[in-house]
Length: 390
Image (cartoon, rainbow, N blue to C red; front, side, top):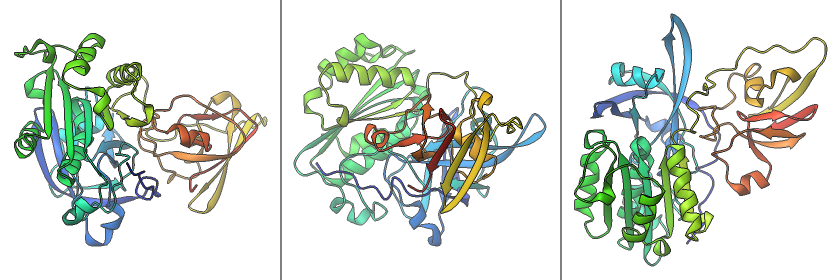
């Protein structure tokens, strides 16, 4: 198995205004949005299956214009000239509600260049050239991939499945996909088509929590007991080369713990959260108002971004994140979710010490090298310096 290469996963992010080419209804509360990528931006929007983009626009919230950013996984195998994402309407979600109700072809939105680590550790490069795909995916010998997804967690998984299945006849892909009911299943037809195209190599297991299926194993919510049975009958864990887990925190954590108990090596498990399990925590869309303490009780936060140095004072009593402080003096500091999930605000700690509250994005080796999520990191020393360009 080859190691993944880094250029496409850690490049400097940037927003560009793209035109919506098509909006397609997937379910009653989910749409697929296709953005047209002009020729001069093709290289900036080359991506690996499993990555995401952040969308940015200004919406009217309680009578005031507010900048809103949301991250969405790319739901298609790489194709030059377009980016496709799926947006599921969340209860109370400002952006997702607006997109499902109002977004249409011809609209223009700011779209961030692709990022993300929810990608295969098998080597995949230059995937915007599908005619050469088989030469860019290292699947020497037989390879078995397994994914467990729930709800909108299917979006990056279907991109990965389409890509690896097309890449080699040696690949097998098993998918356990959990939803409440059949009407909630995103990409239902596309998954069926994938099954028809690769009947011997793609296995699809729909688990519906609120509908009775013929098999009791595929009915009801996936809990610890059901997962153990699925892994004991439907999936053989010792034959799997790589696992992909995507969905809400509770399911992803249950799968990680269960696989660990079954002896699956952590490096074989890729995971991405579509919620952190703390829905009451407000997302940081912009820097919250903070002022430096004139009495001098401040942390000094320095940062490097695009080769330029910045510095800002942060009151010790405010418990302000590095991201929030940096945004007060540099509004172009990169971020998307501000919840510790996407990794867009990643930077290297150059000096000083910080406390990182949550981390659902950084790999263990990145932490060892000194990288932090600035949206979750607060100074614990008088002065802190981070490098966004590292």
